[in-house]
Amino acid sequence: MATKTKYIDLKTAIPGPKSKPVLERLDKATPRAVGIYAPLIVDRAHGSLLTDIDGNTFIDLTGGVGVLNVGHTHDKVKKVLHEQVDRFLHTDFTNLPYESYVSLAERLNARFPGGGPATSIFFNSGAEAVENAVKIARAYTKRKGILTFERAFHGRTLMAMTLTSKVHPYKAGMGPFAPEVYRAPYPYPYRCEFNGHEPNHVCDERCYAHIEKALLLQVAPEDLAAVIVEPVQGEGGFVVPPQSFLPWLRKFTEKHGILLIVDEVQTGFGRTGTFFATEQSGIRPDLLTMAKSIADGIPLSGVMGRPEVMDGPGDSQIGGTYVGNPLGTAAGNAVMDAIEEENLLEASKRQGEYLVKRFKEMQQKNPLIGDVRGMGAMVAIELVRDPKTKEPADKETNQVLQSLIHKGVLMLKSGVYGNVIRSLAPLNTPLDMLDEAMDVLETTLAEVGGR
Image (cartoon, rainbow, N blue to C red; front, side):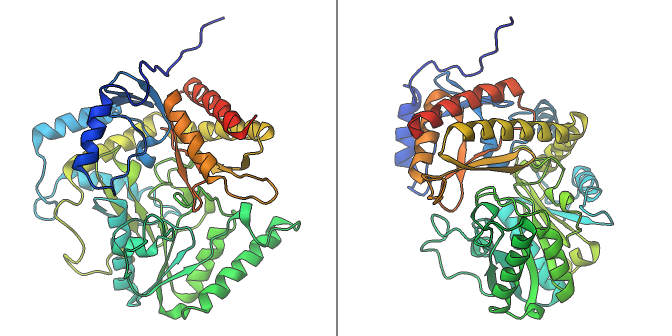
């Protein structure tokens, strides 16, 4: 029998002797707002493996918080970046344009969910994309109100932070917030107050009626410029709504002349098994925000939408000095090549199927796992202290994640209660590497859960 490849290679305790002094310098040189999750200092990374300066190699399932769908330092991305550095680094596209920006826009426009013509504009971060999507929506509709959802995360700049639902740590003490923002419930099947013992379609209808009522108690629909929604909530806990949710929301917005902005910052670029998660709902949004895995770690984001909506703002009303930078757009084209040529959408589906299977097997053995959910490779487990009461196991979640670091596996949490362990592994992660990581996770869950 062939010997299984072992990817984790720990040479020292964590943190190692070389990492410790750098972490001490970090503590003195940076404010406490720069919270450090893993006590290690990165030296190099490739694919789904990361090595610190002490020579310890970890399986990295954090994916740079959803940025590395094609993996660390993908060969195609490295190649175009080296070439671009030798050619030029900056011009400001609106003053002196370059082809990589145009090519990336054309390729993305062709993938606009629901089909039909689209145009794109690029920015630096996901929050910046959200800010500008709101500006575009207001310019086009001449309305001011924006509807967002409970547990939403849209970024940390003023409008994006206002749209974000989670108070700690993102909003506490940071007000006043932007005006004309309203909030409605987002369907959460595992914790749905209407679920009971009735068929899911009944629960769905009741949820949607509750959402509509919550909205009507806050603002007149005709005063809303847009509704912004994540097709799967990311920081909110990898919450997957019922399949009928986005189609219902699309009908609701069309009924009232409201634009629909779909935030695909974390769900885009193959994470959910399709290029954009919205494709799986069959709807066509008015605007779509994208970032994270668009350029494999180079700062880049964008807004894509129906041409007439995108043309709402006037000349030079939208832009910025660094937006659509040449390194980012070059990397973005290489990411598109990698996704298409390596069939990473199918890889995402296979990874998701594998993770769901492993997580459900763990759930059968360990009552800590209250729920297993996901779409494509965007998969998570929610930890609870009691399967009946569903009390969030936040402390246990932290114990699991910290123990994983010391065993060579890097994963992240999410959710309002901080009790959801999520996988954002690169889509091209070998299944035997995932297998090794899941074995470590299963053992750790058993230790923390007392079994």
